[in-house]
Image (cartoon, rainbow, N blue to C red; front, side, top):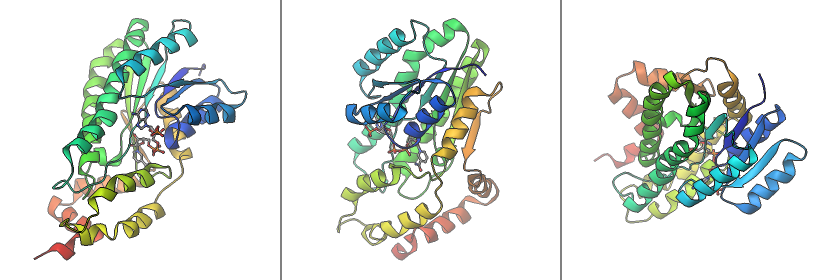
Length: 284
Ligand SMILES: NC(=O)c1ccc[n+]([C@@H]2O[C@H](COP(=O)([O-])OP(=O)(O)OC[C@H]3O[C@@H](n4cnc5c(N)ncnc54)[C@H](OP(=O)(O)O)[C@@H]3O)[C@@H](O)[C@H]2O)c1
């Protein structure tokens, strides 16, 4: 496989950062993008002699997207990118009954509208070349939902829906759209998601007793997580395969969770999750 021009969003941390370095080590020319100039500069230093360039890009800022696109044009001498990895995102954790609408708006702004806006700006060059690939980092909660994951899960369900439609719309034009659906991956994600939960862990909340145990639930989730090298390998496969799958689940054991959802009645799954998350203490 010849080397590709790959742009990664949210490359300053976790999955995006690891994938950027991994793809560069595999001989591809990587444009690693992110919001933090300091984090981009550290990444650039770590990349050493690798073909990895950093560019500022905040996916929620239209001007920043167009400035990044102009810089990418310059870097690729007008050719554009072969692969776009839409990775930037975060998890808002909160009870759906109490979540602030502005927090949900911000979640959708980054995870959904940011991804769509970046895609629309980089697509035309792929279309005119009749070749290209878009890899959207969704989540296992893009196929399911868990208590307190409602807003985050809604954002990833939206990513799945947009990706499914776009895949069919772009296939005749020679462009593949691929979903990567990670389960728990060891990154900054959980720490940041726990931060978004803090304002909701207040004494007046009907969920106060459940959310007081959030650290315990987090420890359980951490025990099942795998390192970002797993997502990097899958992203590479999605980028270089001649005929990529429509979706990749990582790690593979997450297929078991999806199989349970497919096989068991919804009310039974609800009861299992209510037990696992400690929601039964609320029963009257
Ligand atoms: N880790 C998991 O368990 C897991 C599971 C399923 C799906 N995912 C998905 O994987 C993706 C990457 O998450 P991660 O685990 O690598 O978490 P992470 O370590 O927190 O990294 C998230 C990255 O997204 C960037 N980002 C956030 N908002 C942005 C914006 N407006 N513009 C540009 N970049 C922005 C962050 O940059 P800043 O540092 O500037 O905020 C950071 O570089 C996300 O889409 C997440 O939903 C993660």
